[in-house]
Image (cartoon, rainbow, N blue to C red; front, side, top):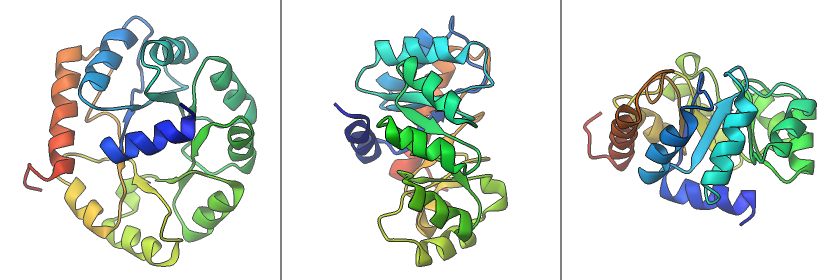
Length: 212
């Protein structure tokens, strides 16, 4: 299955990206299994984690149907490094045209970080598969709604930063297509059982079974 097909399938099932900042290779197998077993198939390991390329390689090999890759990707060389490790997803905190172009060239899914309409349109023009709205603490639901009104209707908007099960509904109502979930899902040293529980809480919130 191509990265783009994996992305489409994951979005349809659970449009939540697990951000595993600080994950170590030793913890990667158990954490990855907890997430995938819970229905999460979008997994990023930020490159400022310990040995991130090793963790990405382990996760990608163990879960071939999941879309695994890196976050905090800042250069085209890092895109190539992630690709060599078996990663298929590139997530950045910012928009860098070189990063997007290299990800597109390699057939990877790319979600650059944007905070304004200018950045959003530039990222789409460069070939981004979707937009990471970051930091979401500075992009309230009203701003998401305003962006949704001017961007092409098929544009994927994924707020990231400060997202919890209790504030997802208001962003979803404003036009968010999914979310990137970081420390509310996983912190370094967290046991797999706790990650599994957090993952299930977020899924329930997305499904609307937890009052927001």
